[in-house]
Image (cartoon, helix red, strand yellow):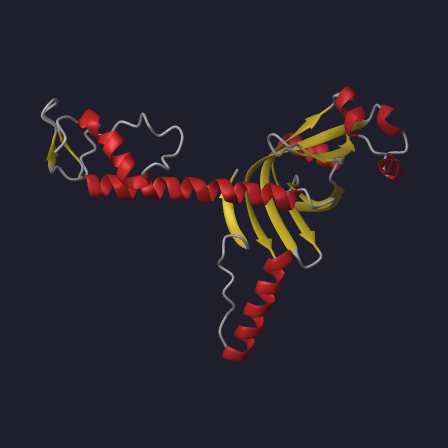
Length: 233
């Protein structure tokens, strides 16, 4: 029996994880939060009733599971993203219709996952992004990987960054090179994404599920998060 609600953290964490307690969870405080889930445990020090430990255990496990799944999904998105060289860049046009065009990916930032493209300062993309910043990027790599990424775009006219991101093949679209005064960058900061990954062993597993579904008359089981998932970024 706990003498006070301050003793709950250590006992709960030990029962959940034993010696494998995750870093950063040692100071979690339960009780005295007056959560009102179901009053059945009374703290002798503060005189308030607290939620049952079983519910607290379950809630904590679920929170950690969701957090781990979200982290893995984000890592998956950025792993797939770095395998693409082009994207369909979808903006909202003046009439409110979605407008799409293929664009070369100039860079994907390692730290925050921002995706960068070159464009003209007075071009359609720059104008539409200034009117409506939320855009959609659609990626496809043959039939192995697909990625839909929604993000917030902004136009950057930073000469130093333009020179840093510049690659000579871009001269086909921008003959003036990195010193062209009309050249600009569009950076897209990811908001959320959805992916379908059939690369490597995932492709073999998908082919097996597809063949099994064909002969059984049922839909293939492709619900594994390693193959398909949605996530906030």
